[in-house]
Structure formats: C-alpha cells, structure tokens
Amino acid sequence: MLSLIISTSNRADLLEKTLESVAIQTFPVSQFEVIVVDNGSTDNTPEVVKDFTGRLKNLRYEYEPVPGLHAGRHRGLKVALGDILVYADDDIRATPSWLSAIAENFVDPEIAMVGGNNYPDFQGEVPGWLDRLWARHFMGGHVIDTLSILSLPGERRDLSPYLVWGCNLSIRKQVLLDAGGFHPDGMPRELIRFRGDGETHVSRYVSEKKLRCVFDPHASVYHAVTPERMTFDYFWQRSFNQGISDSYTQLRNKSLKASLSAYPRAIARRLLGPVRHILKYAKGNDPGLNDPELLELQKLMQEGYREGFKYHQRMYREDPEVRAWVHKPNYF
Image 1 (tube, rainbow, N blue to C red):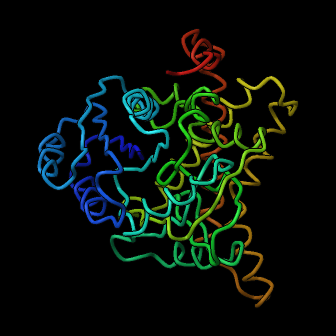
Image 2: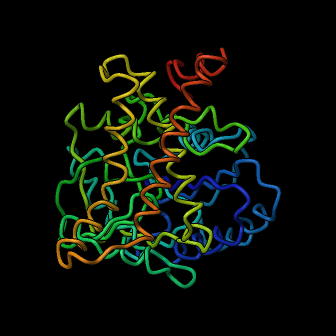
C-alpha cells in the first residue's frame, strides 16, 4: 500500500483542488491511503476533508497541534500503514498517472526515492522577469527552485535526490526512518529561528548512502504559483529562509569546513545561479542589452540570503533554545 501524506495549514481552498486530483487517480483506490495532517488550521480544512470521505476509500484526518511542516510530516509517518510514503504539498494537482507511476517504480527494491516534474500552475498573469527565469534551460528543461517548479524532458532515469522536493517526494518508509526523519522546514514567522534544512537532509542521506533516486515524468504534479509568489518580496523572503537553512546546516554538520564568511558566499552562488545565467545569456546575445529587473532581483536575493544567514547565526549565539534545537538527534 502507498501512504499519501499531505500536511496542511489554513489553505482549505488549495487542499480541495489537491484532493480532487487524488480522487481521479488511475491507481486503484483500495491500494493507497490518504492522510491529511491538519497542522493547526483555523479555517474549514476539516470540512473539506470530510467532503471527500465518500470518494477516497482510505482517507484519514489527523490533527497535529505542534507547529512546523516537519511535525505534520512526521505525524503522517507515524500513522502510515504503507511501506511507501508519498509526500505532497497541499497546493499541488496530481496528474492522473501519478500514484500508478510511483507504485511501478518501487517494485524495484533498489529504488529508495522517486520524484517527477513539478509543472508550474501559474495562478495569475506572469510578470516578464519571472517568465524569463522559467525560460532558461536546465538539463534540457526548466527549473526555478525558489518556487519548487521543475520540468524535465525524457523518460524514466536516475536523478539527483536534491532535485526531488517535498511537494512531490516519495520514499521508502524504512529509508526515511534510517535517515532520522525530516529536519524542520516551514515554520510560522514567529518561530522562524527554529527553521532547519527540511527534506534537504533526507536528500543528503540518500546521496551519501548511494541509494537510488529515480525521476519518472509520469509521476508528475502541477504546483501552484499564486500571485503573492510572483513578486520580488516573495523571492527575498525565500532567500532569507534559505540563509537560515544553510546556517542551520553549517552549525549542525561539523564536517563542513567552510568558514562563516566563505560559506554564505558559496551557497549564494548556487542560489543565485539562475539569475546570473540569464544575465550572462542576455549580454552574450546582445552586448548592449541589460535587464534592470533581474539585476534588482539578484541584489535583493543576495541581501535576503545574507540577512537570513546572519540572523540565524545570531540566534544560535544568543538563544540557548536555538542551540539545543539545532543539535537535536532527530525531530520525531
């Protein structure tokens, strides 16, 4: 059996669309369960889940009052009946073949993790600068990791686990347990100092253990890109959050030898690669062409990243709770 786990918080409208797409899967409904983990919602999330009980045979509602995406993910892990865990965000729409493709891949006992495309579901007019970001080439396709959207061509093949994100991540339960579960990820703003590196920790474990991760285009979803995500403010905030996550990784993982000054710059180069690639491409094709929007975006993302990294380093120094949190053995 597959166990589909969806952690949600106050996004009942988006969750309804997600469950609609799950209800029309080609995979037999008797062979998967759906666990919706309500991570402290105050909207009508329980009613939305209840409305689908007649259409999804093995649908369960779980309430998790502890804030944080990792808490919702782990609640689902603890109650799951299946040996294969399918994690999805509450703002995806699954393609009809999604669960069937996931199940087919895990027939191979060597496969530890499965991912697919996360096509963009732009919910509004796409600004020009974002359209240019999406248009750049990546492995023959397109990617904007800030929005967790990915479109790759071709058929089933091995893929880096770092390109499998939490909005569409399937993994063997035992592998996740062996990894020690997820690290903290999405947190309420007032608890942002307790953010960690989320599913990146799991991807790192799969990579270091040389376990197989597979990309299957039939295991794909559409990921909502709402109007508020198509703004510079959102990209700044995501960069700030990434700075926190990378500070957490550096402080937790003693094997990282990079200095506090060099480490942020190294990660920032990775984070800002898409913007620099576009600027280089534009200038290479027309020496007189400049893109002030993308230059501004690059500057804002650099600023956000630096601020997030410095903020978390300061919280680690000043707050004993943060220091203890960073070094917890696991977050179950």
